[in-house]
Image (cartoon, rainbow, N blue to C red; front, top):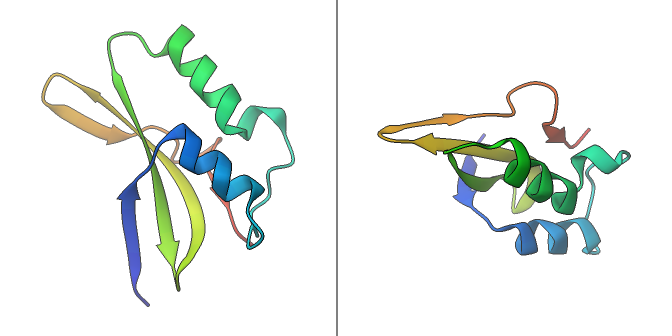
Length: 86
C-alpha cells in the first residue's frame, strides 16, 4: 500500500467534495471545508492551518488538518473531524 500526503487549500477540498469521484462521507455540515475554514478563524488562535489530503490509489482517502505554531506542527483532526472513505 502506498499513500501520499499533500498540502491542499480549502478551495481544493471543496473541489474534491463536488468532484465526480467523491467517495467520502460528507454527511454533516461540521465536516464541510467552508465550515472548517470559519471554525479555524474563530478558534484557531495563533496557529496556522494547513489542510491536507491523504491520497490512496490516486483517490482522496482522508482529509487531514495540520496546525502549526512556532516550531511545532501537528495533525489536529486525528479523531472527530477526520473524513474517511469507507
